[in-house]
Amino acid sequence: MEETKEREKIEAPFTEEQIDNLNLFQMAGVMHGFTCGSGNRTDKHHKDGEGYLIATEEGWKCPFCDYTQDWAHSFMGGALHEEHYNFKNFKGFKKTFSWLSESTDNLEYKNIWTKAYIKGLKIMSLDEKNSMTDTQKTNFIFTCTMYKQKLKELGLKPMTIPHDKLMENGTLSLGHICGMLDKMIEFALDGKVDKAYRWLGFVQGVLWTNNIYSIDELKMHNTSEKEYEENL
Ligand SMILES: [Zn+2]
Image (cartoon, rainbow, N blue to C red; front, side, top):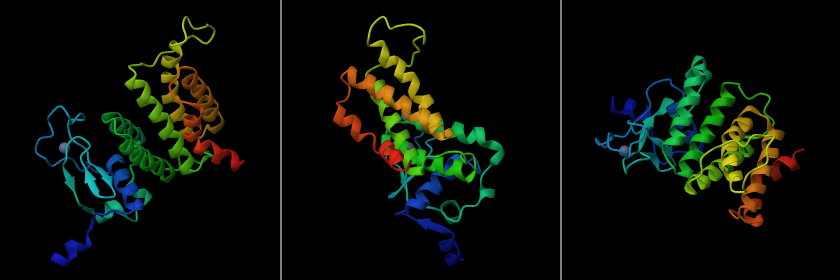
């Protein structure tokens, strides 16, 4: 009995593949995700009201407190098959991903969820036309997410300057690119790769002229673009 139980579990440290699969499982709507077991998840820090756990190398972590869990059911972490995913519930999958990503400001966590989400899209065969590799996509989305975070810290909110108008003053451009970043993440996920990088160039120009990042810093954010060009 005890032996069977052991076999049905996996324990931390989790492998990279297990991390993706576990987080994917959390989002895919197959069953209710693992949640914080601190007994205090209704406090204001557990923004989602449940404390959905995130799988990391060291095990599950609660993004909102110091609760951890070091095991998972083995079927959640390995040998995932298409039938594990709820194809009819793609909207729910997408929604849970956005909800988790917005629930915390932790960039490392956002990146982990994004990687798992991209893997899920691939399993669902929804990104066949996408010409970006998974790494390029992850890097691109990470860069957009980082810029979103930076602009949020500066107190900026998304806004759209009418395309046929000039700006009344230059700082409005930051609000405008704020609104572009969410769309850029969608472009990358939808495989609109040229449009994604064209917009990135525009956004980076605005970030530079507003003294947010130096050219060297912006170049460093562009690993994914370099890889893309090399592969053309
Ligand atoms: Zn918690």
